Image (cartoon, rainbow, N blue to C red; front, side):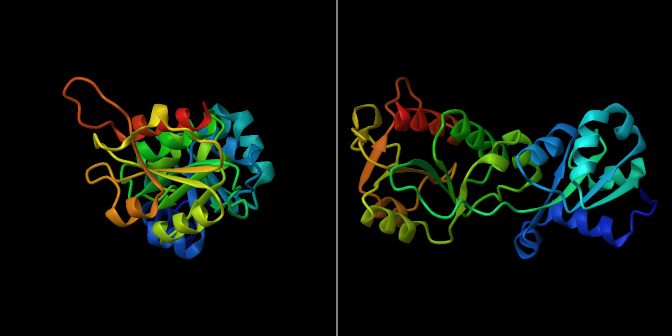
Length: 258
């Protein structure tokens, strides 16, 4: 195993940039994954790391996880603790990092499936929590348009591996995507906090469906809402005007599969 001792090593700088720069992740079609269990989980999900970095302490403390990762990895490098801190997005890094290729989408929508679509959702914790909900409730996948990159380190941690297993489709034009889905017979729903929208609990969904959730502060854009066949809402009591994006996603996802 080759050892890297300099924080200015080109491979370290490359990995660090993958962790911090979403545009670079898109350009390279790669991402940086951190953490013993998360890296091991990625391998179990069929993701083969291009390159793995780990400390001696991590090799000892997380032996079984480290073994699974190193066996699958293309290149393996031992790093010092100060380099781990450079790569890490946390205060107390576990000392295991993988450079991975982004997973390819499953190859198109299942028109009989049920999906959550996110438009300009910014909070990585929300993205991660929604990924976990979509997987846990057995939806067909997630559609993402704008907002936080699903490969943001905080989003990856919050997803706890779900984003590495889900079928995730990214689109730069959600309204056009929704119109095309509608033409294929899918029901498209815009979730909006409006009294005149249909109650999601009373909305019959008998075919494939996509339910759209918007930005935490501004909701869905009018263009996206107009591209949907129905506007639906989650009825709320008290003085609450809206739900957190991940909480709303959990309710809406449940209604899609109920």
